[in-house]
Length: 346
Image 1 (cartoon, rainbow, N blue to C red):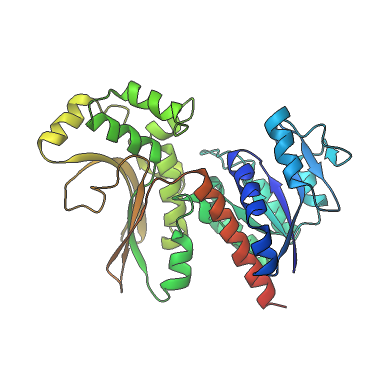
Image 2: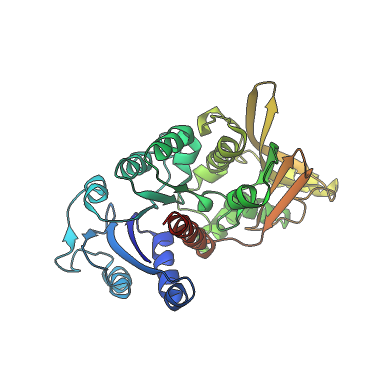
């Protein structure tokens, strides 16, 4: 089966996804029977490509690595907007990998809506659309018989959404608690070892864990987007990051972490969702956890999520040292699940 992809956004995750595609090409053809082609790439600053035929992925990576741009790729180079590329491409799946806008979810939401209107299935690793407009997007996808997958939005490539969808039929998710932001978890871990927040952040930035401006992480916005996405999907919360009761770690200092250590506790930035009556309350705040907590050993860039269920009690999933490769794998796995669904409908 031939599968044509359009990539909207081509940063670290998009480039790693292409490397993964090249690495797994023989497996895709030989084992899965999938001939996967990328026929369009839309970027904000690196140039865009639109073609009727498969683009040369090795050359694309080379152009980005050596020139930082796709402008000299060839006649496939275009100055069309991302929306125009979506409307004019012949893709089966649009993969949306633009940067998170935690307040509006744009332009990713509009990209996804336009893909659905064209009858194109969507995979995204951008948590904004799921955190802000999940119900609307799900409804639109259903009305156009399009598929919508987003495994890479929370905990990198750990199969959180697929786990519930495929292995917990009949279970109701009654609550959520998680350590979901790797930057703050790394910083807090370093602070327990005596480093100041500034030095811990500097180390995180040097390792590519934290952005140049880490405020989205430190102030709890990233965790707020993730718990909103989880609560919206699993608990029908209709949350958004701005509705989350949010407190980051900006006011945590070495005195705080030293006091926690003296009490045999650790400080973790915990995101949670709890149903109270008809309302789902979402929250992000630092908490003291002890050795009896599933989050006690979740240090550095690791993350964890506990699902409170009605039939299976509590299930905790821990990801050790996630990163861009794992997020790219989430996109890859979502693509395979869509391909499986397409094949089963034929």
